[in-house]
Image 1 (spheres, helix red, strand yellow):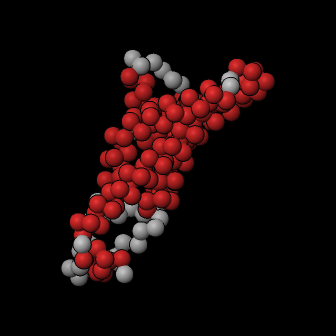
Image 2 (cartoon, rainbow, N blue to C red):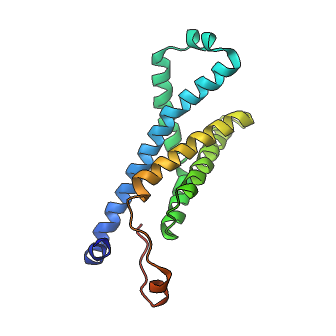
Image 3 (spheres, rainbow, N blue to C red):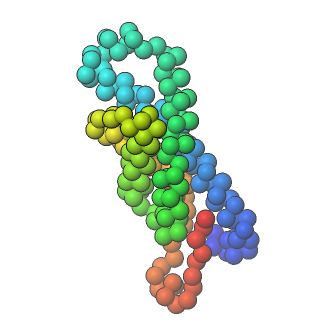
Length: 169
């Protein structure tokens, strides 16, 4: 049983959980980096027309954008994402809907950080909404990799009886 394995060596289980969280965060950032250029291309195609967008963008441009989007999202979303992950781990939040919201919040905050770094240049509500949507998808992917496989938290009756489970992180 999972709970008995954690009782045997809690330090090793915490390290394993930490690596799972870091790996899931990296996977979510990679997914966001792939989705972001696609979402922006679709947005531009809707505004400018698909023929103009296809002529001005090459496949290599998309690859470069994915690379820089990964690096930017990994760094810019890290402070908010780390805080949300710690809150979710300590409170044992297991809801997929919560992680959708966490991802959207982390995406919008990453865009805000990027805008502040650029000197406060306004990006527009549409870009924030697009990046929040991409962040929501990344949050759901994080939930699938790092949270969904976890056992459910112990019932409240066990917690009230004095059986306290330590946070996994």
